[in-house]
Each structure stands twice: as structure tokens, then as C-alpha cells.
Length: 315
Image (cartoon, rainbow, N blue to C red; front, side, top):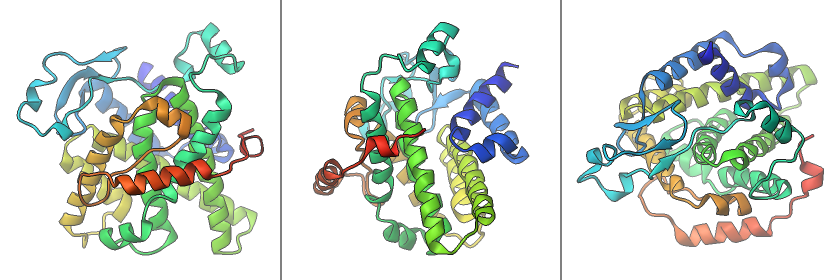
């Protein structure tokens, strides 16, 4: 019973804001995937994002803290592969006691950053995953076809990496996730309309298809992050390449390294700065060092970006 409740909360956090899916429900395949993922989370330990070995932190054990055992498997490992000293569970209003949930639903929750700023920061996070990512370079290096679907799955990969970070940021991170994904679906709809003249029915069906891809990719990436590189590579192969047997193993190895190093890189970033500015950086596809000149230029562009909070705020 508890597992089913948690699964419903998990899926509802992604379904919110997409009424067609809320009404029609999540496909059976996705329900099976979510059950598999949650069985893994409840039956095993979380894994280090750098080395994929089990950590002394339980997925449903309240406040997560490391013990002395955690550092033992990192002795002799490169510093960049070591995880931080604390992980927090995903924050959801559904987990709150009734009175606190009422306070949250009434908009009286004491946030570290005002909600208006979080709306803008959520939009900025989406820009970091679109305008500041060199998609043509990714298409060339990964060997994906130069089509809209490739842009979408690569976008989902980068947004999921960001979500891994902001999921640890409490109620502010919960709101950032909502605002970021609302902006994403607005942009996806505009791009689909610009590609071809779609009527309302065709557009709705296409959006549902991409929403299913979106949910499935999140479940696969979550499972891969907590598992070995072999599992992560398999899940990347499924979500990005659709199990294409002609994909070169070197490309999957490159993507596994890209995911691991960026999850670790963003884990070390200051959460308050992300809440205030909405800027988050990515390490390059090749190499482990941040391009500081590009990061500073991107931040300046982001701060100069004019965003009408009132006009774009979710209803």
C-alpha cells in the first residue's frame, strides 16, 4: 500500500500541469516501469553517482546522512568522483502533515526565495538546458539523426540532470521543477506548431506521445543513476537510440561519463544561487573542466534576459 502511494506521488509530480494525461492516466508500461524503479529504491541502497557503489543511505529512511562506511570505498578514488556529505529525499507537498499541507496550498509557506523569483529562475533553468547547450555538437558526436525527436530526447537528458540537483532543494526545488517543466511544454508546443501545420487533435496526440517518452526517460535515468554504468548505458541506449543495434559502444561510454560527471558537478553547486539566478552550468561533452569563460558569458546573457513573470506565471 505504501509503495503504491509513493508511486502515485512520484508520477503525479510529473503529470501535474498536463491535463490530458491527468484525465487519461499513465500508460500501463509506465506503471510497470515505476513499480520496478520503486522496488529497486525500497529494496536496495542508493548508489554513489561517481562510482555506482552502494552508499549507507536508505531511500526511505527519513533524513539521509552518511556514515563512516560511506567514505571507505572512495579511498584512493579521484576527488571528483566523491559524493557530497548529505542527500535529501525528494520533497513533495503530499508528504506534509495535513496542517502544513494546508499552509502550503494556501500560499503561506515560508520560502527562502520569493515565489516570483522562483518562477523566473525556473524559466532560466530551462534556458540553460536549451540555449546554452550546443545541440548540433551533440547530434554530431552522438550520431543521432538531426530531427526534432533527437532534440527532444537530448533536452530531456539535460533537464533530468538538473532535476537530480533541484530535487534536493526542498520546497523551492519542487517549485523550480514545476516552473521549468511548464516552460518546457509551452516551448515544445510552439516548436511542434512551427514544424508543420497541425490541427488540435494531431497536436494533442503528438504531445501525449512525447509526454510518454518524457516519463519513460525519467524512470530509466533514475534507475541508471542508482545502478552500475552497464545499466545506465543500457537505459541511455533505450531512451536515446531506441535500442538501435548499430550504435557504437564508445558513444554510450561517452554519454555515461557525461551523465556521471555532470550529476557530480551540479551536486557541488550552491543551491541558493540556483534559486536566486536560475543559472546552472554543465561540463562539456569531452573533458572534465568547466569552460569558465562560456559560463560567465552565459550567466550575463541570462541576467539580461527579460521575463514577464505575471504574463508567464502558471495558472
